[in-house]
Each structure stands twice: as structure tokens, then as C-alpha cells.
Length: 485
Image 1 (cartoon, rainbow, N blue to C red):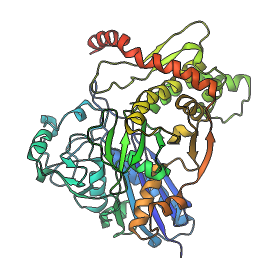
Image 2 (cartoon, one colour; image 1 turned 135 degrees about the vertical axis):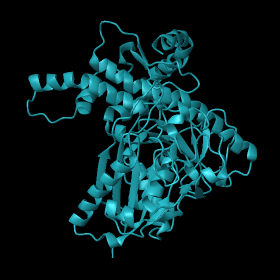
Image 3 (cartoon, rainbow, N blue to C red; image 1 turned 30 degrees about the vertical axis):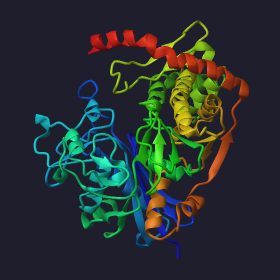
């Protein structure tokens, strides 16, 4: 008899629920877009109302309808794994309800320890998004030890709360304000009757902990071998690689708990609002590309705006004829005055140059962070696996291969985080004996993009320029920041 597991992936922009057979096949899925973030003030960002739960419940209902509509029985689902966006803060009343909308990772409050504001009212518990969604699903105040990134008094080696009182003081927290912890692959709890009624799955279903979203993506992408880098093309674009040793004092990367207990994830600084900037360009300028196609070429074209923009930009030479994009649409915490910029305009440049430059800017910024990480680990990258919706773009894949100078592959199923959830859940339920067995079933490589040597040489020169730009732009953007604030 076929057994099934559920992978739950809630990111900044959408909630996804995938149901996998033990053979590795996706048999049903549900997607629900999240509402746009509310920006009540500069450098503040919250998820409106109870949007994370509302979107997830809708995605569940869609997936379950597809599952049962195909003749499957929800009684054959053995477990679900949950992966919810990291680096957020959730403030709860004593009854578990939200005291304040979920604070998104782009909010400046996340750059500092928790500090009470009058608008919060009663706050009894402070947790992560995974802790909150786990509570909504099970009624248990339990969280994964591997999603505590930022101002949390956690011991990453012990995989539990720290016993250092000074660390607790620095985080402005005490033990009765936080949830109990479990390791990735352990149960958060069982699906409550109330949650079961809301999402359409049987009460009592095991809900299994994973890690933070990028670590779950790394597991679900199959990027486990030394020298393999994962590039996660999300709202926050991250680059990372797995390792077996804890490196607490690295200069060019962070060491995080991985989705497999006893393993670690090395992650360098990424690109804030990375794919968001691509979506921004599409929304602001894509209609013109579409109108040109409809008016001149095929009035029945159903090509997406991204496909049209990618096709235009693919005809632009590598390097965008000298147009360089600096990706500071969301400024880093250590330099909140930084702004995004495009430099080098002349009479040759078109919408297509701008779009290609946005993609190249992402890859160049990643290279600036990935090269030092590889050097410090003494482990050069030999190939990349690229996950996320941006991996659908052949142009983006080729640019990443060219800029980093190594082959870039993508998997048939781009939702690597959902696969990582399924791996943890399936191992907990006894469907697979190891992560290797699970990924053999669930992960199928698609195509690989080889670097074009002459492009790589040119991008080395462009990377040196991109890396030096902030020393010139910072005085200008700091003045602009003062004016706009």
C-alpha cells in the first residue's frame, strides 16, 4: 500500500503544500499567495492580520481536495513536515493568539533584541513563525531548535536553549517566554481536532519539525556533498553549502544548524529583496514587453511577462553593455542608508539591458560573498544547485554559471523546501531509512548549464568593479537617506 507525506513550505510571498507518495511522486499540491507586506513606517514590515495561517490553511484545503479528488485516502498520510519563513518574530498572548502582526525579516526590529512597544499590549510568548504555525497545527508550544536565527539564546551545538544567563539577558528574554525545543525530524506534536477541521487532514497526524527555510531547501535540493553550493532564489537570495563541523567564529559566513541533526549549514551574506527586485521590474515594465508582443507578433500569445523579459534580455550581450545594477533595494542592517542603483546608462540601453543587468547584479553580489566563504572553508565550489522560482529562467541559470564559473544545475521540482520537509517527515514516519535514500526518491536533476569561458573572464572584471561600488556610493546614498527619512 502506498504511503504519503506532506511538505509544508511558507515563504515571504506564498504558502505551498505538497503531498508526496513514498515513491517520490508529487500526487497533489496547493498554493496560496500571501498578501503584500504592510509597511507602516520606513524599515518596518509586517504580515497583515493572520495572513501566514490563513494562506497556509487555504493551500492545505487545495492540496487535500486534489489528493482526495484523485481517489487517495487521507488516512494513508503518515506525517507532515513544516518549514516556515525564518528570521521573523511572533508575539503571542497567553491564549496563543497574535498580540501583533507577524514581524517580517525585513523589519528593522529584527536587527535588535525584543523590546516591548505599547502597541503590542499583552505579550506572554515570543517565538518564531515555525513555533507559531506549529502551535496552530498542534496546540503545543514547541518549536524546532534549528530555526532560531538572530536574537535567540540558543546553543547550536547542544541543539537546545543556552544555559548562559548573559546570553538570555542580551536577548531580553527569559525561559517562560519561549517554547520548548525539538530537533529536526522530531515531532512538534499531533494535528489537533480544530486544525484538522480547518485543513482537511485527520486529527492525530504527526507534525514533524525541520529547520530554517534555507537549511530545509539545502536538504531538499540534494546539495549534501562537499563543494556543492546551493543558490536559493527567493525574496531573500541565499548561497550556502553543507558541512560536518561547527565554525562559530567565521568571518565570511554564518554556521547554522542543518536539517539533519549533527550537520551544519554554512551560509554567506545574500541578496535582500533579490527576486523581489525581479518581480518589481516585471510589474513596473513588463506590460510594455507584453504589449509589443501582442501588437507586433502573436495576439494569442500566452507567454508570461517573465518569459518575454527573459527572451529580450537573452539577446543582450553579457555585461549588459556596461550597465551595472547594485542590489540594495533593501538595505543591510549595518548600512541602513544604502539604496539600489543602476550605473552606466548610455544611448544603447533598453528595457532588456535593464532587466539583464538586474539578473547579473544578483549573481555578481553572490560571487562577492561566495568567494570569501569558499576561501575560508578551503573548499572551492565545484558546482551549483539552484532552487526557487527563479531557477525556471534559462537566462538566470546561465548567468549564475558564467559569473561563478562552475556548472549550475536545477531540479525537476523547484520547491526544494517542500522536499526537505518530506525528507524529515518521511524519515520520522519510517518511510525511508536515511536522507540519502529519501533524496534518491524525491530529487530528480533536470538540466545543467555550463559556464561560457569568455563570459566568466568578463564577469571577473565586472565583479571587481561591483565590489568597489559601495565605497563611492555610500556618501551619496547616506545623504539621500537623510532627506527621504
